[in-house]
Length: 418
Image (cartoon, rainbow, N blue to C red):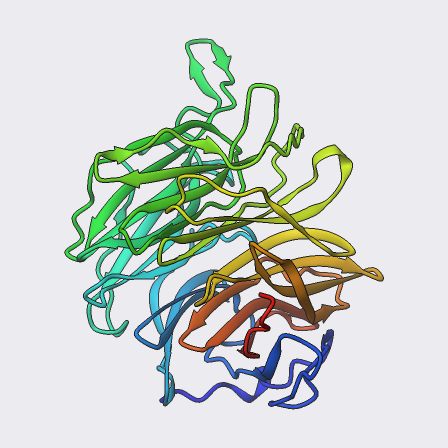
């Protein structure tokens, strides 16, 4: 198995682990019994990791810069450690962005799918979605396929993927094919990014493309989950004619995608994209969504639960915090509670905070995990549950640029009130 580079183990330059003084630490008053720094297989300069899991294995993809090239990388963590990293794709013209980056999913037959963004036009924000598959645990990868039917040089990105049926992956993304279209000599700015969806099989066959919502926020991350009933549920930031940018939900049932509905009337009116999408997670028929809002000039992180397969959601709960930036992620837990992470400002520093929330009691216990005193950002931290463990990964800036950092978190037994 691959051994992590020593240069990544001692990331102490600008990061303080509030509850970690060594590789293992007891957190007596927090959420976790154990917090462990996880050595990673990535090189110095790695950034923007995505995680998924299946059958007790943690899968990760990330990007690395090598001179003028960008590599999309892959590794998987089993009980014996990380696999030797492999390159999914290497190119000179990949779109590299702190908020819109590769994702990973594993199908029912253990085929692995990784997407990335490829520049296609003269503008720095014209790019297409490429996807590659591996049927041998990431040792080799298929030739890339373009995910969408539209080939025009516009933005296609903010992808989310989930295995939905036997050997089938459902994928959503934001699509700019009608965003600022030219009609003759007149530029008709429609201001209409779309949320679109398709499928791909483990054999690489791309399905029919569907427009779920023809007017969405232009650059907020999407999120997707599948319930035990097989219902696919998408969460995304919508956009009204009056520039209200609240969170909407769309459900894929047996007869197709249903009409989207607003999760909650936050009423966040903002003329530009806040680059702050929601996160959705499910277990059994229970679904939870976490998101950031700046409605009425008040920054807040909220969470809402559903107990009917995502058909409706209870009144959202606000999470107590100091000065949240957002960038949320979410993992449902056995028993119906959820683990929510977000980034906030505390004394001029970025902090990754986390809490365990339930519909009945909200967020009763929270913990600050990471403090970043560097001038650059922690970007978008990601959570993933593997059996009883929670993994948290983020981009950590230091004097050498960007690196990846990861923690393994072991939750305390749930309190009776949750």
